[in-house]
Amino acid sequence: MELAKLIKSSQGDLWLSGRNDHKLRQMASELGLPGDQTFEADITDPFQVQAMSEWSGTPDIIINVAGIGIIKPLEQLTYEDFNTTIDVNLKGTFHVLKSYLPGMKAVKQGLIINLPGVLGKVPMAGAAAYAASKYGLNGMLKSVREELKRTNIRITNLYLGGTDTPFWDEIDLNVQRDKFVLAKEAAKSIWFLCQQPVSGVVSEMVLQPFNHQAI
Image (tube, rainbow, N blue to C red):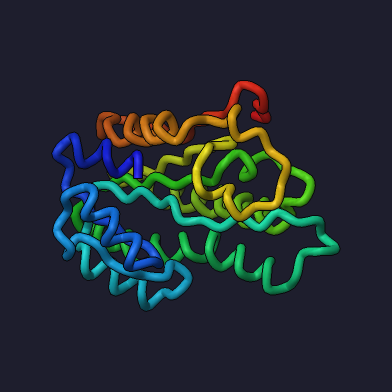
């Protein structure tokens, strides 16, 4: 929400998508967005993501913050937990790239911001499924970046450490959220990436809490 507020306040043309239509419409109301600038879609369904791309057209910037966190020791991790994590965090981004890159290639420009997170580079106990999805995301995005080197399409990866957002509400882990990066500050970092000149690309950026700097 904090990021959406920043983009809206800059007069950016903002389009929102997510799995919960009620939350989307609530956000749109708070931001003063027309209802037709929200789209309910499940990122794990390639057909829904394709429909989303047809709805939105080819945006200048895609900010992909979709993700799920299941943190459990391996012996407690179920096959469903593992598959769901891969489906959302890794395959979901694959569906976004497949649906949106052709349009960006046609206009020869665009910026895609993804959040592999710190666990896309540094492992953590209890995060086998999550780290697998984020390490895979890191590798996939870097490979796709190699394919895009002769275009003006940019891919930026933000390695974000612990951030005080609702993401942590359902995670059974003893963390000090009062020492996390504030949601407003994380939003500012993404907004900063959106404003970078097209003559260059910020390939990676890392933002972490002071008390837990892993990279």
